[in-house]
Image (cartoon, rainbow, N blue to C red):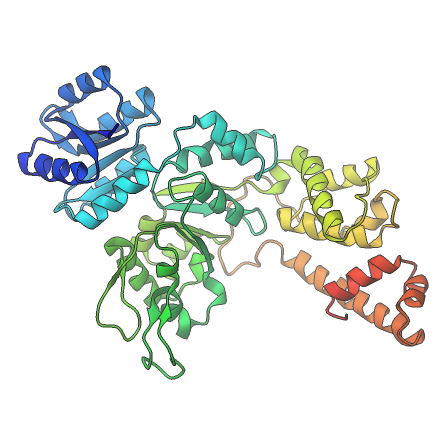
Length: 455
């Protein structure tokens, strides 16, 4: 049985074009020229997809989108907007539209949209939320709310800006949105925008042709092309050079890229997710980030709460982290003493979940095998930053959250490296004897040698 689509538009040419295109994809169409006819059609049968114009004789297409969200939240609705009317498109996405298409309609983009919509899982939001709970741990209210938003946003194609401090798990959130959405069978391509040298950013994003610059000895596919049919995650997007921001904006709007040294554009179908630990709005105000790109990326903002705002989740997180660490090191998982757990739950965690992982990894190394992890094994820094909940994010001139922790980690590793080298040299590189001299197990020493690049 063919899929069913509801098409709402008062322009006969648009209705005919959509009907012909969808029929060619084995989709049967029911047409409506106004909202009254559309609501009547919804009462008579179920649909797999819906297209609606923004302006209709008896109302606004956005009102219809909002009504669908209440009556049939699982029905993907695509909004038809006037050419260049980005504000209406953004408003439609915020209202719950699956995606939008602009007039004049481009058949390639139209087919891509339809194929993505029909790939959406029919499972109810409750089941999707249960699936996300296995990867995004925590039962506090902030985490329950976050998972609920993720399951809803996964069914949209709207660009999402994921905000939050360093170490909160923004990439994990982006992966979940991808895995729960229509593009789950396509690639998920993460990019750390701050880790690419400025002179290579365009080539990395869009690819290049052989001979286009010194060192370009072969054609190279860009990350946009690598993510075709899937999701592109722009991490630390605030670090992009201004010139690249212009080209990124065009690539997003046109859904096409031109490789460096190339003469023709290559069509790409990607969903854009972005993140940064910086205050992106402040970057716009100081001129380091383009306002038009900001509004194109920040259609919907999703904030990931810091660990200090969900301290009740720490026992569950700690148990999960220790299970993974113990399995990786082929050792029994140790318990955490009540005193050590209490200290973890009162610590501010400027480095968030990533810092918790580092602390437990270090504690697992120092604790005697078969014994529980105690306060002394945690080696928490005495420095406790005065960070109140919901404090506004600092601009990039301020010291990034977590810097103190990262400096401490580096110094501790240097001290560990020095002590281990001294023990190895004094025992003529006998690892068993060196482990005894250091007061740790042979397995713990072997783990540290690998971690500190001494093996």
